[in-house]
Every structure is written in C-alpha cells, then in structure tokens.
Length: 392
Image (cartoon, rainbow, N blue to C red; front, side, top):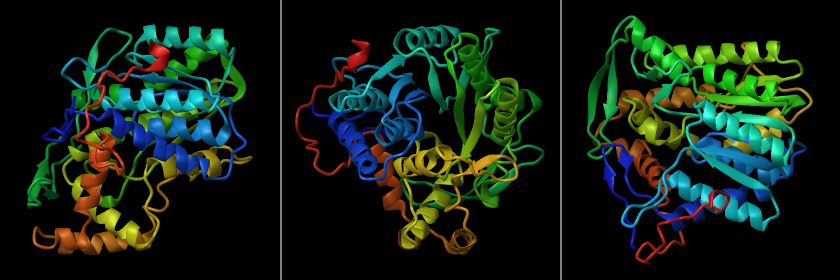
C-alpha cells in the first residue's frame, strides 16, 4: 500500500511505517554519538511510543545500556488502514534494540487500568525481578479511575476568560481567541486525568509487589511555559493537574523508602495535542525561530538524552526551589523569552513566514507520523501491518 499523509483538523489519520522507522533510527544514532551514561539497567517506561516517552526509552537504552519494558496504547494496521505512529515506532525500536543486544518488551493496553499494572508486574517478576527506573510519560484526554468513573480533561482558564492571538496553521491567519473558564467539576476531572494519582498508583503497586529496586528513581513530565500561556496552562485547569503531579512526586519520595521521585519540566515541542491548543502553535513557531537562531533548539531526543546524562544520573540531581528538574532552561532564558515577546507584538499573516518558523512547525508535525523524512520513498508500496516483535 502507498501511504500518504491525511491531515484532518489537528490530526494526521495515517502513519508511514518506513518513515517512523527512519525517525526512530535517527534518534538512536543521535544517542549513540553522545557520551555514555552510568545509569539504570532495568527501566519501565509508561507511555513509551511517542514523543518524550519514546525518546526516553531510546535514551536509557543506548546511553545507559538499559533493558526496557514499555507500556503503549496503540492500534495495529489493518488491510486498508495504517497502524498508529506509536505502533510503528515501537515495532522499529524493538527491532533495532534486539539487533543491538538489548531486551525490549512492550505491553499494549490502557496504562490507567489495573489489568495492565498487573501484567507489567508479572513480566518484571519473570524477566528482571526488580526495576530501577520508572519513567511516567502518559498523556491522554480521559481516564477511567479505579472507581470505574471516566473523567475527561479540559483546557480552560480558572477565574476569568483569557483572550489573545492565535494562528490558523493551514492559512496563517492571525486572529483573537478567547479561552472559557472551567467549573469546579471540570477542574477536578482534569486533575484526575492529568494529575499524579495514577503515577502514585503505579509506584505503590510496584513497591507492594516487591519489584521496585532499592534506591530506584522515577520521573514524570510536565510543562510550565512563558507568562503568555500561563492563563491557559500553568494557571488553568491543566496547571491544577500539574500541581497535583508535583505534589505526587513529593509524596512518593516521602512514602516509599529509598525512592527518588522527580518531575522534569520540559520545553515546548510539536505534538498532536499541542497543535490543538489555542495560542500555543503561534508561540512555538516564534520560539523555534529564536532558539534555532541562537543554536539552542532541541527536539525530544536531545531533551531526553540531556535529562538522563546531565540531570537524573548524577550524584546530586539539580532542581529548582520547588524540587523540579528544569529541562526547559534553554527555552526560558531571558534573552529567548524577550525575543519571542518582541516578535509576538509584531507578528501578522504577512510576516509570520519571515519572523516565525511555520515550516519548521509543520516539518516536526509530519515527522511525528513518519512523513517528510529524508531517504524514505513515499511512492513505494509498504507493509502497513507493522508487527511488534514482542507482541507476536
């Protein structure tokens, strides 16, 4: 089957198996070219098939020589429908990891469920005995909690509406958008989905099953961003969930002896979800231009290698006053934010291509799904089944 991108709204409904494989290989080659890291050897990555989760799995494998178990929630290809990009990414990663002598097993299912937690624990008991690092990188719009209730997150402000400019990525039109306020029920639901409850459930289940190594480390991911986006993120409904995540890190470190628990605040990157957030795509396009000009732009793999090599696997983990690992340090440099703020005041449909990086934004968007990758023949017939070795 010849696979081409089909973009609807902020979603790409197709993925290219060979493109995804090439993108995974490029991330692996990046890490192979970096200095090795003295770090964990048995790593569980919860949310391992895309973005920061996938990059984390690649970084610990090829920098620390670690074996990994990855929890994914992806769809296989059918006769006339491609698999999800995460499925192809995982298939490629397992193939490369096995060829290089690493253990890589994936479990496909809802990470929020008790069933997947139990299946994962059973696999750790059978193959490893203990796990010494747990990376929690789950991002989902809804969650069914242990009480059986399904909660849905919202992207809304708290207290009052927020109006600012945004961009239509298909037309480059700049317009105003107003973000509505969330009610208490919506805030609670967002915390249930994106807060720290499920992370804590995972870590306590691992501890109770005695599969968590002494002095293990765990890390979850977050984003703070500039003041420009604070009303819809840091101070909004999602921000309340992230504060719950930070609280969970402190509680885990206190409640589980020997465990080190952190939240890493990462930089803004292009994802399916970020493309749908008003204001954010325009901010990212200006940010990318500034960071590329200053030579400090990073994608997921550069960030995750730096997290593993320079932050987590050190004698002393450097955090801010809130005990957060600030991997967004390049993005939040005063000179970067000042330059972005100046561009924000100037931007229009007529100059966005000149002062922003719309092309770079779209390039990274398509790469998520395996398209626009150098060296891939997009006119060739490809096998869209994309079998994951450990799931077959």
